[in-house]
Length: 286
Image 1: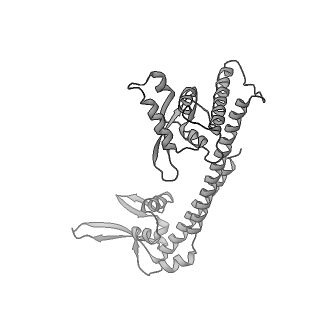
Image 2: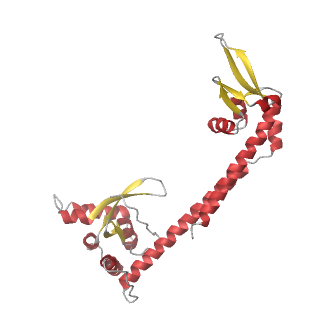
Image 3: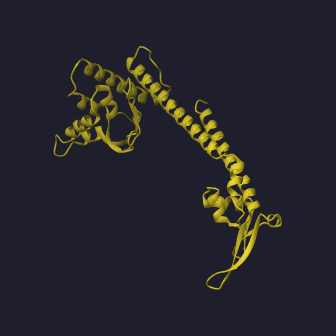
C-alpha cells in the first residue's frame, strides 16, 4: 500500500486518515508527535513484526508498509501505516507524561473516526462539540486542508514567478536581434534556427503551422509571397555525390523578418503561460 498522508512537522497533531475503509495513522506523524526520529520508529515497528518468526495475520494487518518521498533530497524512504491496534502496540514502549497525553489524543482520534464510519451508514455525521475525539479529528483535518492550500498557493506563486522570468527572457529588444542577424549572408533554415536560439523541432513546427514553408516533391518549399518578397528563396545545388538537391535559404531581410515574428510568438506563448498560471492560482480558493 502506498498512501499519501500529509505530515505537519511544526505543532503536530494526531492525524488519523481513512485508508481503504480503515482509520489509520502514519509512522511519520507518530514520530513527530512523540518527538522521535522516524527511522527509530520504523525500527521499532519492524522489531514488533519480528517478535514472532511468522507474525500473526492480525499483526501484519495492523502495520502496512508504505513509502514517502523526502522533499529535501527527493529520495524515497519506507514508512508504515497503522491502525488503532498497531498504534497501541507501538505506543506501549513510549513513556513519560507527554507520551501518555499523546496516547490519549490518538485513541480519541481513532475513536472519533470509527464513530464517523458507523454513522455514515445511518445518515449525516452529528458533531458533538463536547466530544474531544471528534474535535481532534476536525482540527487535524482543518490543519491538513490549510497546509495543502498553502502549499498549492506557494506552488502557483512559484510558477507565476518562473513564467514572468521566462517572459522577460523571451522579450529582448528586437533591435538587438536585427543587429545580430544583419550579417549580409544567406543562411539555411537550421542556421537561422540556431541564431534565434530556438529549439529546432519547435521552430520548424511553427514555420509549418504558420504556412511559411511546406513540403512539395519531398523538399521544403517557401510560400509564394515570401519568395516574391525575397525573404525565403529556394535554391538547387549539386552535392559531392553528383545529385541535385534543393534547399530553402533565408536572405538577410528574411532573417530580420523571421526574428520579429519568432520573438512575437515567444512573447505570446509566455503571456499565455502566465495567464494560465494566474488563472490556476485564482481557482485554488474557489
